[in-house]
Length: 204
Image 1 (cartoon, helix red, strand yellow):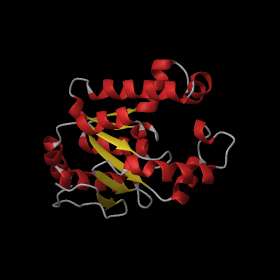
Image 2 (image 1 turned 30 degrees about the vertical axis):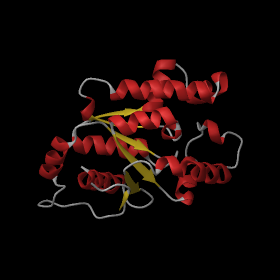
Image 3 (image 1 turned 135 degrees about the vertical axis):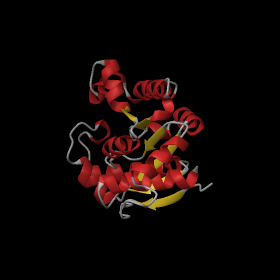
Image 4 (image 1 turned 180 degrees about the horizontal axis):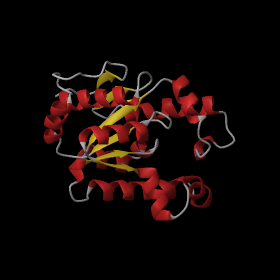
């Protein structure tokens, strides 16, 4: 078992005849017996990479933030403003528990919000019932990516560089408890997804 091993997202995709061609991915998918949960900072690409990974594995995909917004019938910024972060985190935990406990849960890739894995209860839930993959990225890349969206409650009216640097330092200890870490700063989403497959393959 490989715990905490890092796989670079810039690695070359495996070509036909190598372990991660279509047949190799199908073989690996049969060995995966639980959900795959992507954790990491906002802006690291969990949702985009997660969709790509789910496509490769012919699995379902769920974005926890989208699930929360659908259940609450309001956006994440509205939830934070109206009810506060503790309320949001509790709802987030319940949504993740529902996704992990659903029928055929092993055939799903789940992208979590940036703070989900930092909640002790949520982190324990994920570590016990899923394959947790930490998507990591350098600060400059995170800042560039989050600047493309304006619906980040923790960044509202604040300096994104300072906030992200502080959050990254505070959350690293929690993220590092994921057994697989993948760098997503460079390369395409396809390459990052293939690196996740390599990480899971080595860990299983």
